Length: 350
Image (cartoon, rainbow, N blue to C red; front, side):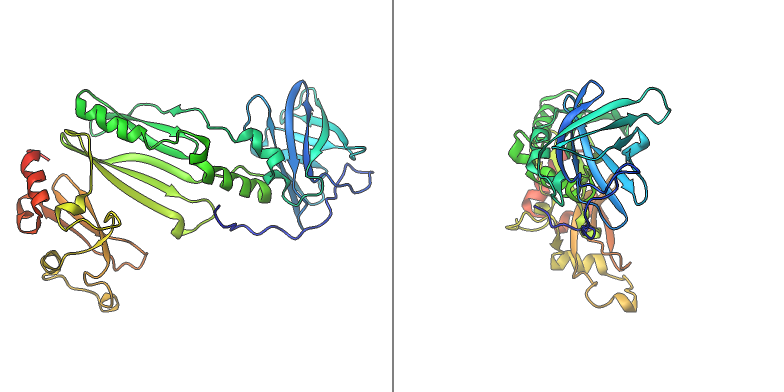
């Protein structure tokens, strides 16, 4: 489970009931009715200046954040889709009213406690989350265009990949590999559920990692896809850019570094430049004085296919010292491994 990066607010007794009632504790998990719809709700302990909770319709199982600011008596749904007014709990029950943002007839709220009474993070509990933690359905995105070629995104939970649209055995094989990235069982997305529980328990919000997948290079022979992830609650260290390349003829995934250096034990996504290649790339390159320490070819580089040649680009840390080079395909020969020479000789037009 990822470490918690949002500190819980100072704990106080949960305490803003409808005006005229004594302070009460709603902290815990509840189930009941909103109008005629079955719902499950939760409330975390109140913080110093606000309180939060969440609820979902049993039919849809999509958490909706509830927040209430200091001095207010009503709870506001995220997106301002409605507001709740609740009375004082009595005997494990609480009643109230739901009102829409545009007025209209209010709906009755009637809830009964089902556990986690007084819990500081009831919305992160088993009682609230277990019914939500099933493998989500596959989401299929709209067809998109990349330089005249078509693809669409496929997503389950926070895992996203692409599906190529085109004919040929190689394309079909690549699509099989791309679809295999998606989770197949609940256990495959344990981190997704852990992150959601973490933020539900602290903020009442069902937060998840930001993810995407899209082609960045696509020729008649090769395709490179960028899989992007920004882990919720992290800064720059939570960002990952995973560039993966497939051979559209064989359907196999390839490691571009294998074209320039022997295979590395860790897969070789970022590698130190081979000495001969480093000398060639840095010949005549002027390095700023403040960048000379540790940035003259001593960083780690990724390899990318481009229309004009192979790109070597250094992992960036925001210093402005990172280097980026492109070698035209016609000049790659002296730096290729036997595997690289075969790959480029057989590829024809990149």
